[in-house]
Length: 382
Ligand code: PLP
Image (cartoon, rainbow, N blue to C red; front, side, top):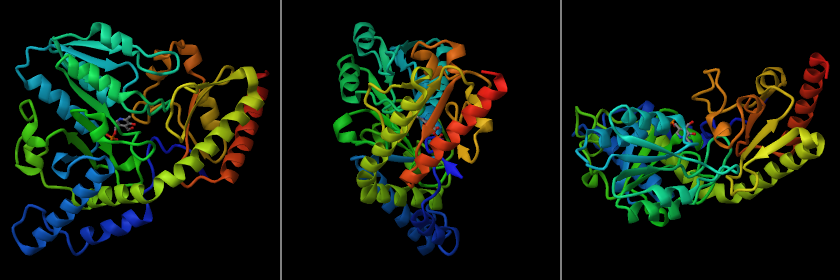
């Protein structure tokens, strides 16, 4: 089976599972307990906090562990909603993940003005649009570092400068960036960022919210109640094994990923040039002219429905859009934001290679893909 859906989730690396194991078994204590066992758990959480912070060039005290990036996004938008900020405008790029778009939409229903920032046909945020429309009424700009469907990388430093010049906060969804490109809070200078362990060979259900200056610098009321964990921003008993696994996954990234990324990018490029050679005018690679993360290929077939292909292709796991919206029978909002109509968007397939991929896997994929297309065309009488 070829698992080419790494942007949806990744398997836990064996080293990560091993790092977590003691915290399911012997060292199971609550990290807030004052006894020795509790202190051991708290020490493990501190180590993980350092590992996560190091991998994003932040300080450990700026890391707030959450259940994932969706929770982190919700905390940011709820915080702003509860605030008495006189600024009522929020800029959100049109190709954000639903975790961000729908959190922003909530504020739209409560009197905020949500401005969707258009993107170019290559999937890059239209910076001129932000600079022309941002003003002293802007509270927040939310732009992802890398897109989960088409992989395009946004110029975060430039957008941060625009937001800060206007006195607004900037939030960066960095879920798909971590491990696939340099991620540095020091360089980005953003106010908030979110991360998710299960996209980087860590466990599901754990992530981090980066807050510049840490929870003490959080500018709004804290949306959650019931405990003082994570500076009161994310109260509740800590998921010690998950957090330890997240830390271990970050450590592995530091050790390995940069050397793997070049290999991954070469394979992705082989895959794309073969697809273009074989399907010529019937295929487009979205975002190909923009900077992209190394593992992602967004393919649009003109004459084949992606749903048919996905259900027909043998032994290959792919997706049509983000896993979070794939149960809804809608076209990808990302593809539509690039200017394609709904009909074209039905031909969209996301290929996202895992770190373990080999050249033989790509060749096998191409062969299975070709076979499936042949069968579908025959079935449709094309
Ligand atoms: N943002 C992006 C870009 C994503 O790809 C995802 C996951 O698909 C999320 C946010 C949500 O992350 P989580 O699964 O940790 O809630």
